[in-house]
Length: 72
Ligand code: SF4
Image 1 (cartoon, rainbow, N blue to C red):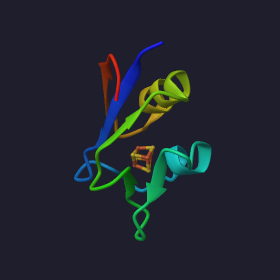
Image 2: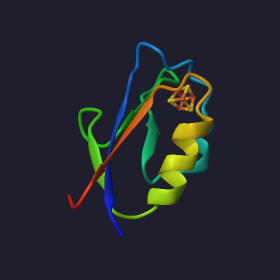
Image 3: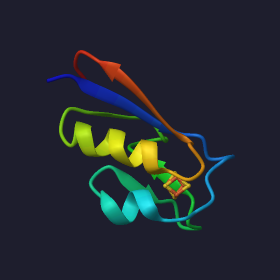
């Protein structure tokens, strides 16, 4: 199974909390409700890939950017 690189477009994030409530292993609340991921808002993940993609599809601001990669 492949991996994904994930990044949040914070300018668009509405702090709805959906992503970090569903998958806190990947998404975090920056402190003001805006989502962040990994270190410096860049993360590569080989687990939870299907759920990461589902959450990106459901993000109301469409601001979770997911890129398929072969490995991290
Ligand atoms: S689901 Fe989207 S809009 Fe909601 S907190 Fe996460 S990145 Fe922001």
